Length: 617
Image (cartoon, rainbow, N blue to C red):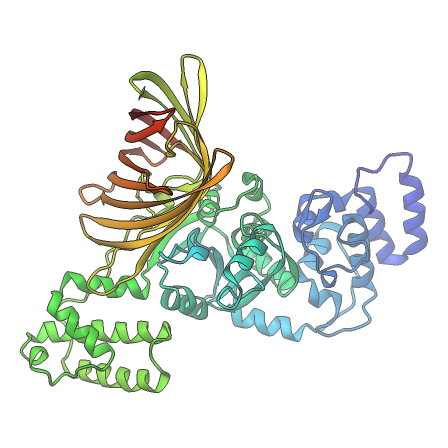
């Protein structure tokens, strides 16, 4: 493996003689200048090759001209120069057509002269069609009950000079995998530890909107970027170079959002976005990184179909919604007396909700196409006869995720544990739990990765919990939707019968219901503990409530568990938290817990009170 290092002065003359012997004329001059000035070590050339350290992150041989190009920026630069000057094809297969960003930069940087003329018909056609003028970073937020989407996603929209953004093109990066056809466990393992290739793709923006907003029911946030026309064109040239080439995909690191950062840095090399991430690249964090770098100028919101349906709860009562649901699947028609007796505006809103529900059922695969088209035609034509509504129903714009807290968290506080003064501390790498400030996050969702909390008493430091992964998806079933809630947790905690930290794994399911004030839930969580050198089975019967209505800056959570162990031993556990959001990345949290203990032949209660300051970064 050849590695790039600064050329020692004693080797420079030998290298220059080699270059001189190898090239001639304009190519010789360009190659000599590139070697003399160490152009291949410059940042922009590294960006174009996706070099990180000693090699490129792109593994596809088709991306390199030199056989050693993945490991040597110098070899790839010299091979690119030679290929540009000695084109053997003068059409879309030429080097200049395949690598427009490389050609532009080398031409500007080295003052290339005498390059052969080539005709890039395919590139010019797509360039004219896309018409890149500006760019937008798009963030489809999480969708409850979809583990693969709970971190969100990001991709770029290349805006044209047309007024309609729907006519723009999207640049996406995704794994070559279909989670709906792959075994879920295999999909997760390969996503975490490698096994998939990822690829960039360029496709119409409305197709991506249909996929995320309508099919996956994810609200869309659009963040316009401060990139001028030249910067956007520079990025588009590089997009052309990397589209369809493959690189390894990892769910937490080399993922969709990370790969977008390469493109933003290619557009504006003065910003360093990738360096902000150590090992986990969370989509929302890349939006924060772009904002911190001064790239974000404004934000826009496109509600999902589910959000549009939910908005009709503001104007329809329970009976209205029941009618709309039956209309949506053809169980009734507009001649039914209960519909006909409604006011004109009610009938309009009932039909509008029914149309949205029909589309939702079809996209979920619950309606055959012919039946869907029949219902859609009937509902829309009936609605059109009723005229315009006095009040248009639109979902309220939720808090901007860009104003939410950051993913990493440190905790520090004090309180009592078993009536003794205690110092509490903790650190978490990602991302959000139900006791954190809700502002900008999807209600009822939690995903924590590597959360470690401890406490100190009388110079003794103990582990309170060490969570490897914890996910909760507490859906709030309502008049429109009824869904299952679920959660899973793997890691160490102190909820076992004794007071030691025990490793455990749980997967549970249940039901939740909510309204504007908060939500209630009931869960059953089977679990396995590693205790006393063996596996101990248990099951939690849990009930909880979260109140978050009165202010976006406060939320209260209380949960009661009855933990039943194998052998019939029972245990009561109560937890309570009250959070106050002081600033975007600062909150104050009050915690209380009551745990029944049974160890060493005695039974006792353990109560903990804590006041914790949380800082997110």
